Amino acid sequence: MSNPNFPKPIFFIVAAFAVFIIAANSLYTIQETEQAMVLRFGKVDELVAEPGLHAKIPFVQQIIFFDKRVLETDSPAEEIQTGDKKRVVVDSFTRWRIVDAEKFYQAVRTVPAAINRLNTIVNSNIRRVVGRESLEELVSGERARLMADILKESEKQAGPLGIEIVDVRIKRADLPQANASAVFERMRTERQKEATEIRASGAEEAQKIRADADKQKTIILAEADRDAQTLRGEGDAESIEITGRAFSKDQNFYSFLRRLDAYRASLVEGTTLVLDENADFLSTFRGE
Image 1 (spheres, helix red, strand yellow):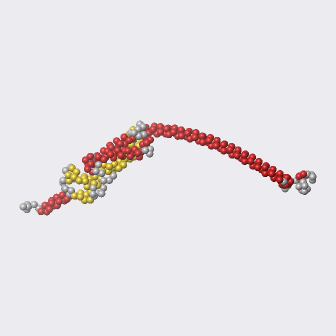
Image 2 (cartoon, rainbow, N blue to C red):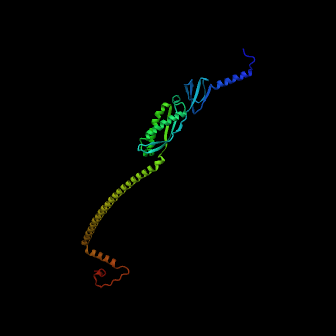
Image 3 (tube, rainbow, N blue to C red):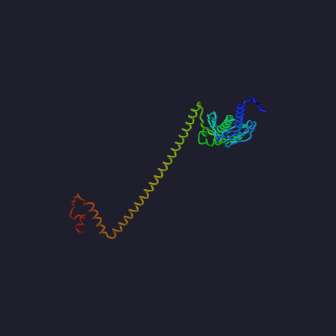
């Protein structure tokens, strides 16, 4: 039997508030970028990845949200010794995501704790890889191979944490300021020495090529001159032979042609000849 002295409006307000509290604790919303883990008295009850409005048992089940997106973590810079005993300051970053919320919760529980574990894993692998390579390989095109090695080993170690490592990158690998100048100077000296040796080798090879070219030139010119002399001799001999045959066939005609050639060469404009009228040079004009 209800208490007639208890005000009904207050009762309704208390009841409505209680319903509101129960309803508020019975529903939860998952965003597109989230995944949820439902706990019952501290133990994992279920994993929910579907976005939208979901129901739970109020005051019994607890909801923990985890990000589904790829997260990026900057590792603190560390000074590491390379395989050739050089000290370098390495600064890296890691891209990762939570792929198994239950493993993640059991292993590290929170994102800050996961970041600390990831930094330990990644930096350990960076020290291992950098410690066996030379400084030149670290700053050259070999870096992609080194990053693949670091990523592979880091993925293996992060798997039990419910984490997938998407990428690991070294942002910079600088020499400590104290010895950077000395190392750069030594590297420059070594490169200058290599350049001098290469130039000397190139000059020697060029000299050999020029000497061989001069030799070939001399041989070619000598052979060409020899062939030319031979051809000229053969041509002169053939000319003499042809002339001889023509002369033997008609000696008078040949003599006539020779006199015409002589007239053509002597009787040019502006030339005056003083000759005896009985001179042999004028025999043709006399009809002889």
